[in-house]
Image (cartoon, rainbow, N blue to C red; front, top):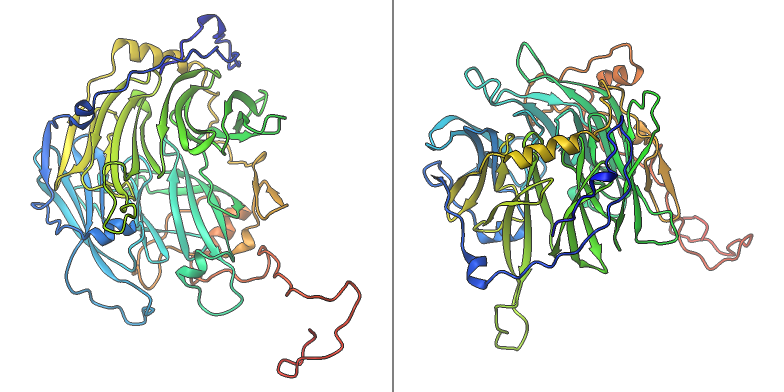
Length: 547
């Protein structure tokens, strides 16, 4: 449903805030069942079998393993990666817990399906290993190391040449980038362990903490323009954070009013330049913590709950405080997004589990849920639905779809093929609406230093941590390790900057895990029945320590 605008509320003098427009709810008619099952016709199909994809077992798909990725390099090239079958050579000294595998990476021409370049990667587990980081650049995880590469920029030389990326700890949980590709976030899980090597179970256990490291990322990844990071800052949380950030600042929501469901959204500029900072950009109503994603320099997407977590609402807002449109979403699984800011569009994947269409089994028990994955492409400002298609099969990792940077081409995996959809060009109405909402974008930050003032996250029950997390939680380590081989380290400018110099100095240190020392939560005391001030009458003969 669309939310009509009141033009009198828009005052485009500098970057001022307009009042919230009154929302009018317009009920949408439910589509017919046969219309819901009808799939759009792709403009081209690329056979996965011809690319060498051997298929994947239902067990891996059900477990949420990362087995197939599809990403646009530009509107004429895709990068497709997938797991191979066959014997895998073990690397001497690898832990017994490793689950080594070979993954193929291919650059594919669109729409012909011709393989332009190909390589293989030796991985050590079945977790997510690849993230796009904007402008045709990618981050690859091999075990506990990260490396970056730019396939399209080096297409005619060495498209898969990698440079190691310095990381904080041994377990990278996620890599995120702002829609403009200028700010990079590395999410690391730091196991808290006194001694001995940490395992994946330690990283996922209760004795761990999540640290987000943010950097400015520049360079195309070529010899003439190498990738470089600067302005490193971090924040720590007891659980992962979805950080809505762009090159000029970040959005942050607080619910300090008497109404626990009211959230005030504020934009915190890195370089306020005499302007009011932070600036309130609107209010949301949600019974759960809203998920916020920046769609462009002047719009953001919100996912809110309406009473129950399974009853959610998708909406987009302008930085003038106006809600553009909203749509109810009954969800019980995750959502993934791909943004095309230049055309004012975004793609969304949602996975839904359903048992309604299935009968009970012989014992009268409900059947296992059936997962379906739906991909939609929206016009951000108007809410126009440009594409609605279902993938086959459904991948929990949601790495099987993408939207080109210009918003004109979408791709998704369906029935053993990569289906390519040509989308219509933005209409005159769309371009005019995009130009109108762009007037309320914050002033350019001119690559100001990243600051996280105003960020407050819950570290442990009853405690909060504001601003930057201590960098001593774990050392910064190089993406280059014995597993990844010898690769150059990404450029870290600012040798005179103490933080950058410290990062550069630590970039060659070996990978280590965090200890229960500085920056780690204090160890919990064993429970006791003694009152304060009482001492145990007897000692444990085995440990010779007080009870």
